[in-house]
Length: 375
Image 1 (cartoon, rainbow, N blue to C red):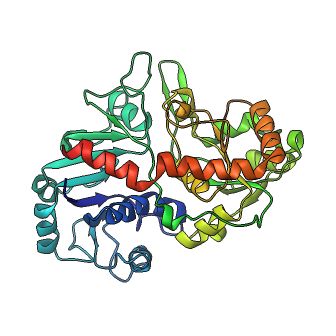
Image 2: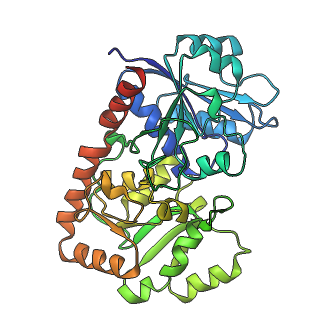
Image 3: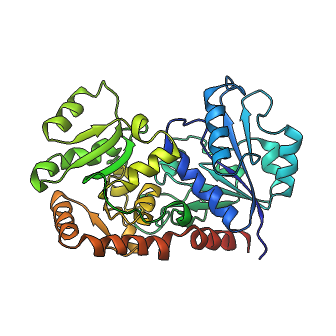
């Protein structure tokens, strides 16, 4: 199969100063380019975004930095496109064989109708499906004809994640290995991560609470004292969360501002690669639903040769665990994993990179995804 033309839609301009969110999209853009695809990035933005605004500058600088300076268009609501003309964008759409749209955010009917294969890319499993099926939110499923998810249990017997009448292809988060080489040395002898305390509201459905990271971390507050390890979280947490902030401080968690240490793609990469290992917290909804979700952030740690201790979501069905990558459900699991890393860190460092090479390499992940979507 010759390399297709692909339009990717996601959020970069809408999340300036969030290097990790930028990387979640860049892995697809850079990975598709590695496969020889002609690709173009399209992002709908708010009506008040103009060519001189901070979100546009952030996107333009990011795309220039990675050699994608002429490969993007922003669509301000009710206004003219930025980055290319509407005629140029529609020509790109007519040329494209595939749309990959994160959470179906691209809603422009003219662009959508011009592309034959329109894939909804679900990086937020359970929430996207329950918003649609249980809360009646229009998640724009009807505008798409292919459905891809980081989860691997959607619609399966016993799974709480409804398929919403669609067939979902499971995938793993891709990582562009040349952008994430093995990091030498450890600048920060800490288990780290980057994230949001709360991304949005939780969902209560059929008596089950599908919560956020806050709900996953509260039962684990005793870890720093129990293990003696240093836990450093680049955590976006609102200052009004006074009780949780006090509890984190009392239990010796170290908090740093993600806007200071992970605002750009380069900052984020530096923060990940300076770490000893990742302590990967999942949204509670991903965990209690046994979704199989795996973090694009954790993929970056693994590729960098940084071991990952990640909250159990069922990802062990697709990724090897026990060397370089550990799944935990309780404090004791984390303590055991830390002890194993301390006993033979170099072995686990090598194993982490090997998992990224064998299972998460963008060439493998995106090559297989293109074949399934376009065959």
